[in-house]
Image (cartoon, rainbow, N blue to C red):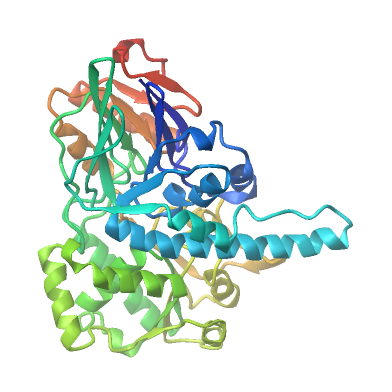
Length: 472
């Protein structure tokens, strides 16, 4: 009985963990590595296991750093089912089709260059057709229902409060009469934040696998975040520029729209034209609208009002490329929400090209920016950025609004783990090294728990006590 870490070990993206019970094996997540060309090139490497021997995949949620290599897994020989919450299944259809489209387009662009240089052509990681095949293997599951998926392996999903359909995975494992319970946090949301319910507290486990994205910091409170946002909007109103918001299509975009709807009058948003410039985000927002049974009470009530009258009357959906390009002619008065969330691709890069050099422009960063991404450069105060071979001077004001994060901060992570009885051994994943170290030290000192920091390729024997695990 083992668990082996093949992604999101000492880094934030690429979540992938292999659980073995006797002759049966399942994967927890199968995500893409993100953050610069060198890191993303790892996505094309063969899996360090034989995909055809995997019985099933349990997907914690639809974000690409957790789901993005699933079509490649299927393409490489995986024949089993992919279990995930029903809303997560619906969002994955959008996310994986978009990922496949981008793979095809980027490969087409790269092959034009290679052809001119007389180099061998390359194939995309996976195609739209590959994504469609993989999506046929998805199985939607309700929260709270136990399901046996292989001899000695039973699981249950509970609400993680991160994005719509995000799940904590409880795994009951049995081999030769020995039983173990493993709990995988997936990505945890922040308690008390709008739209979704708080992360579910679990009482018991023999081993806990927990994310640590923001393990070294605390988010601003909801009140502080709202004050920060309104101040940015007021400043931008006075400077008569545009506001750019790079936002993940699933989760962060819907949170931003929620804040705009709730504070529409308070923030004088009627003075602006608001554009959701992302076909994927538009589709994802429609999925959110179909799954209001997962909302908290306040958000469900707000949605009922929205059915009677638009809460954001000046919200425009930019679906086509021409509609998106037209936004670059607007000099002031536009709030543009566009992907990608880390500014690594998509329409936001075009808007940065036309706005980042303007001193009256404001860029609001509302999500985690991985090392090596354009978004991280902006957060770190880059004076110049490169877009399509052109150097763009950054004169816009860049604001990092951490309080909108869909991830739990240090306090939220400690609070969630602290609810377990008897402080089971804890393995930290999905975090950069410094973040994991800070969180580990605090949990060890304040909660008196055994904490291990996962390393790539490392295997842990679940039948051994934590004291005998490799030092990490």
